[in-house]
Amino acid sequence: MEHQEGFFQGVRDIHMYYQNWLPESPPKAILLVAHGLAEHCGRYMNLVNHFVPLGYAVYGVDYMGHGKSKGPRVHVQRFEDFTDTLRIFFDMIQKRQPGKSVFLIGHSMGGLIAAYYLLDHQADLTGAILSAPSVKVPDNISSARLTMGRICSALLPKLGIIHIDPEGVSRDPAVVKAYVDDPLVYTGKATARLVAELFKAMQRLSAEAATITLPLLILQGGDDRLVDPAGAQMLYDGITSTDKTLKVYDGLYHEVFNEPEHEQVLHDLQRWLESHMGPRG
Image (tube, rainbow, N blue to C red; front, side):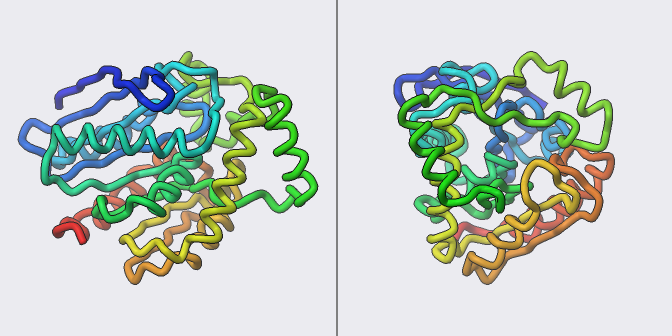
């Protein structure tokens, strides 16, 4: 396995950190990882260690304000900065790996980024995998609170308002400890602007989900405490792809790739990928 890392110029001239893991022979396909809120692409080693020996290449980017990338911590000017960055990175990968099938894997906030990306760029991909996608506005957020959030986003855009509970990440205490001790994981609060942009993106995705026709696999922990598991079903019901699968793992928490049962999840993903290795289209 070969590991590479570096930086590229993202939107708003922000230096974006990326890394990739390559198999010993030319890869049979590319797995492009979109990570979740406050974390970074280096937390997907279970995915890397499972799939690179099988001949897949794994690519990941730290989003602006996350991990080793530059920018104010866990903040964004507009949601499209995430998807525009993903587009730049995708184009870079295609130049390095011409003609290879690309599967987009998005987790949590990255699941929202990935699904949003599909609204405009699904033709470039062979398929997409969404893990615990954060695609549903919480039921306790009223329209009045959404309005207040937009006002706060405009007046105090960098005010911290949402914090992730590490205990909800995984049922594995070692995973939680590694998350808490990881200096690249941001333990502060996401900003008002970022949260408002996330909710706005969720609303567009809900309105336009029917335009998604790409083969799609959704993986969801049944006891997820960080995102509403109902969002996975909502998205599954909303897309019009004739090739869509929703797998809910009873009892699992948010990070299904990092749960004690992660080998089962990875083998389920492996079988799905192997059945979708045909030409793009």
